[in-house]
Length: 90
Image (tube, rainbow, N blue to C red; front, side):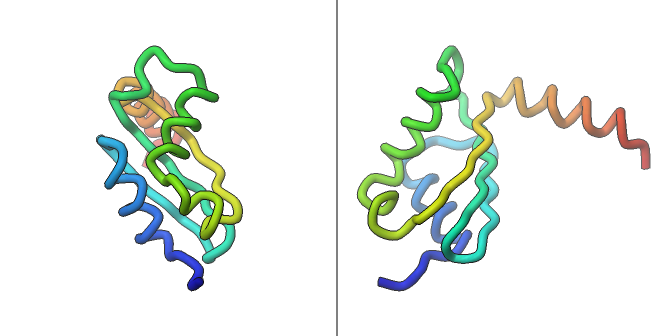
């Protein structure tokens, strides 16, 4: 089975989870995803990760060897972006 690309991982997640923002980087075996979804509101980090694993389904076991992720609500993401832009002036 061919190793998935970051774009394919994005599509797999987006197919099963409504995302306000989704970005995946990786080399075919190890991936890092930033996933922003209103569905994460009120959920623990573990519950958020489980929700992403459900979106990926069997692909998580069969094709994706390592996936690190940052899971945020739209509000958390906006707050994080505002903090990073104010601490790193252009």
